[in-house]
Length: 316
Image (cartoon, rainbow, N blue to C red; front, side):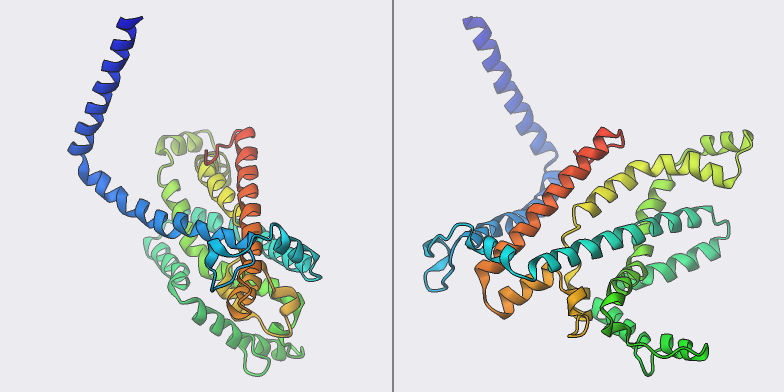
């Protein structure tokens, strides 16, 4: 018994010595990883202390810790609000629409570029589709507003040429979601396609040649060779997208909002901003934001579970 315990102790000491030696040998790698870890600790974990605001009646003079506890008061207040379910519905609807319409576009674009034989054409399309990603959201929305302007917008000019009356697209609640999704596709599809192009670069040439010998045409090679190869990448990105269903982009929606389309454009992120920073109701806005984060986490875990059960891999 004593010999066994001594051997185990010696093994632990040897393991610790090996780890110290290994760390000293590869200190550059540890130094590189320390920076992103430090970033997440400072900006993601330390601010979690502020979550206490959701359960307290926050008073600036008392500080977070000394403010009185109120339990689930602000959660109940949010769910009892007449606008709460409309805001949640808008958030889910816009996110689901964005995933359904926008998620396949980068995949199709990457496959098309991968099949393109003209290097000049491929580089031109890549440059044209990537460029909007690097344009400021403010400029993108400003351009969209100019295109859709009822008087001078190019869209209404084209409608006039075919005999249709001009429309105030940004003033129609029913058009808001489609406009938001189209701007998102325009801005992000080219950049998102880079990941799929990188995955397609790893497709075995032997499999492609074998498929050609077997008589498979281009469509069948894409379906039976390319898509199965990039399926893990597609699944992981889809899981991440599902995990952000409740986190619709704040900047673009806030810039597109106006009094006429507010019934369709008010989402959780803009509501939290208005209640917290504009109305200074910090505890209430923290409660709403915490509820939003918990739902996102649950959706992420559910999507990952389904992916693993169906044999398509997952994040963990």
